[in-house]
Length: 101
Image (cartoon, rainbow, N blue to C red; front, top):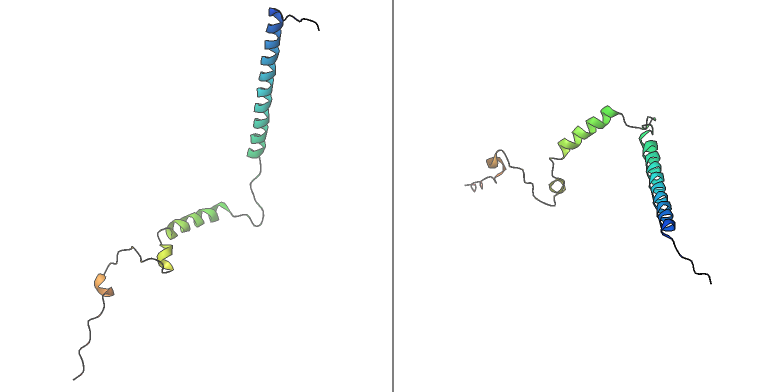
């Protein structure tokens, strides 16, 4: 078996090769990521017959905000409503009627 002596110059060349290979890998990864993001950003928006229009989406968002104030659990009767009644006397039980004479 031959006794190989690694010279200082050989170590420098090896370190440069490893460093350049690492930089090349990083540059390739960045180029790949850039290509992926570029293709994702240049996709056309849906404009088919079933695609919602921008105005329709804005109206739906406004309607959803109005519906957000409702209490879905109170609507189905699971919990009592937390809304304050404007006239609590209207919801109070009527006084018992006087017995007939």
